[in-house]
Amino acid sequence: MAVVAVLLFAGFCALGTWQVQRRAWKLDLIARVDQRVHAPAVPAPGPQRWPAVSADGDEYRHVTLSGRYEYGKQTLTQASTELGSGYWVITPLLRDDGTTVLVNRGFVPSDRRDRIAHPPSDATTVSGLLRISEPGGGFLRRNDPANDRWYSRDVQAIAAARGLADTAPYFVDAAATPGAPPDAWPRGGMTVIAFHNSHLVYAITWYTLALMVVGAAFYTIREERRQRTPKTGPAR
Image (cartoon, rainbow, N blue to C red; front, side):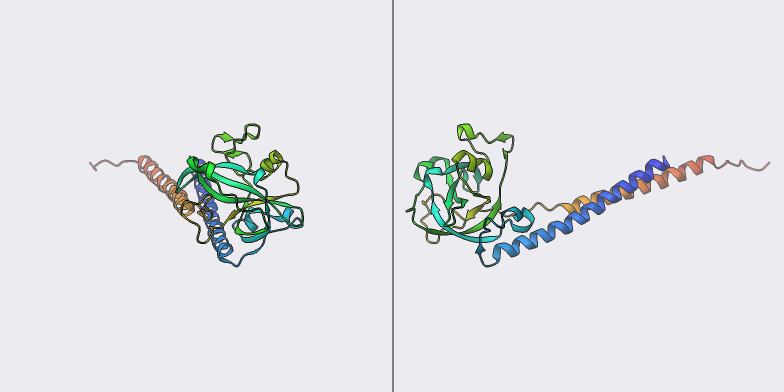
């Protein structure tokens, strides 16, 4: 029992310490993302930087890019937002260097998908947030390229299905269009930036369990000693 108690105590303490470290990492991530979002926009990474693009180093970075939209290769991926269920409108943007970046132009409700605006395909400049590809699909749903059913913004799969070459490994969530009427679709600027951070609660839970093990061990030892102590009767 003593060995089990020591192992449990050490294990709970290790888990608590791990959660403390995870909390520090999460707070640092939140601070870095907040800094990226509110920093001046920088050019979106070009092909030379694509291999180094990562979630930790680049996601939610404020970027700009220019090119021409290819509306004929547009993709709708299912979305659930504060405006209800619908689709993200993913449109390839062909850049002057011949590379392509998928741009999430924004959200459109399910009953408005036939009213998606297609501005003139002249050169345009897009400002938004860099996002990392979402491979596979959504919760309990796999992307089905053959039937054009998309549940996540899987850059590689969408590029392959649309025959896009030299496509960036990320996509860009376009910012809201200033002065756009409320009935204009798609609606940009709907990126939700939220990080679940319950590591402090988890750490307290693990450390509490460790203290409970100590308390239980102390109680057990005290009871065993009390039972082993010989009882003396009254003197005769």
